[in-house]
Every structure is written in structure tokens, then in C-alpha cells.
Image (cartoon, rainbow, N blue to C red; front, top):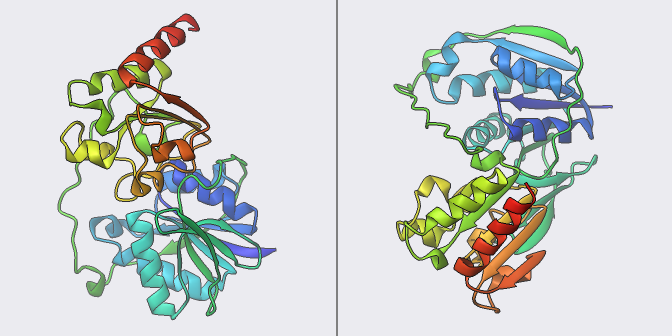
Length: 309
């Protein structure tokens, strides 16, 4: 089978998705920089793990890791090299592509064994197929494209010693601040997301959106219009310029469905829309739609949810 190289960060549903997709293409060799990443690789079916010992790498921006990945790619000559489409993953992939003069595909939503990739273009309005014409298939994989499927095993481990050169120390990380986790699921990984838009009307009224999300055990999201208006913090924005989500259930309340918002939630399994405007674009992609005032519809939904608990 084709050799698949996968960069694995130390946690997250996104990394599990990439490993699951990679298994459909060939034998997976994962690159892990710590024990957590190594464990994740084993849990999701990697046949081999390159365990990199580079203690200083975490103290600097992506350059130290990029140097390791470039060397491994040269040695392994993989058929595919996949990374999550995160800020880090894209930065690493770009450096590998430049160093190896290799083609690069970003934000792919599907891959075939011959290297043909599917990508969303124009904020999800168009689906295109692409293929790298030089080198191996180097790609970053968009979140929500594959349902993570564990395949626990005992991968062979090859230890890789790496030092951080002066050239890789140009940008030092001086501080990391972890956002409080809170009681709700992480927005990017939640199985249920309830989002509010401009139609919610105010920050105080977002309490109703929170109440529905809590009743379903889900995360709270918001449209760009809602965050720009100050109704909810920007870190909860769903969309092309915010967080991309792919839950089992996505509830859009008071959201018209602008193209940049649809780009961030269109891969949701089931979409429920509530909007007073029967012509709102969101209804064009919703599985279930309710034309009505969200302040009348959602309280009724809450009553039904409570009855079924």
C-alpha cells in the first residue's frame, strides 16, 4: 500500500479525522512530537510513529518542526503527506512545499487514492477537484470531512533526535494563555451547536441561545453579524473567518445564511434553521426550517426537549 505521512498534533478531533482519512489511502506513518500525539496516533490506526525528541521545538514558532518534517519527507518519500488545516498545519505545509519544491493543496475535503482532492471554493459555493502536478500529494485536511474512527493498535516506533538550529529560532513563543474551558463543549469539536445571528437582537437575548444549547448539551456559536454587533464574543464566531464546525446537529436561529457563515457550517449532518424571513438563504441548505420568531419558536422547543429528558 501507499505510504502516508501524517503530522499529528497532541490532541483534538481534527487530528483524529486526518488519521482516519489517511487509513483509507494506505499505511499511515505518524509524526509525533510528544507522548500525547504518539498515543493519539496509536489510537487511530498508525502503523508506524516517528517519535521526535526535540524539547526546544515547543519554545519557538513552527520552524523547528518544519525542519524535522522536511527531513522526514525527504527520507520517507511518501505518496501522501497530510496535516490538519489549522494555522499551524498550514504554516508547516507551506514550509515543506517550498523547501521540497512540491505542490500543495489546502483545505481539502476529500482525497482519492490517485491524489485527486476535493476542495470547496468561493466560501463553499463551488466544489472543485485538484491534483498536485509536482512531487507527492501534500495537503492540509479541512475539519469535519471525516468521521473519526478509532483503530487501536501497537505501531512500530522509530525515535528521531532533532536539535533546534539558530536559523529556526527566529520567532520565540514567550507566553501561552489557555482559555477557560467552561462547562460547554469545545465549539470546533462539539456534536451539537446552537448559533444565534443578528436576529437575536442583543447580547442579553443571547441567553436564550445559551439555554437551548445547554438543554441539548451543545456548544454556542454566533454569526459574524452577531459578533460584530457585540452580541457575543468573536471567539464563538462560526464561518469562513471564524471557526469551522461539523456537528451532528446545527441549529441556526436568527441567521440569514450569508455565504461566509455557510462556509463554516455546511458540513453539519443535520441543519435546523429558525428565521422570520421565509426567503432567508439559510433555508436553502437546512434539513428542517421553521419560519417564525425565534423568541416564540425556541421556548416551545425547550418545552419539548424538557419533556423528553
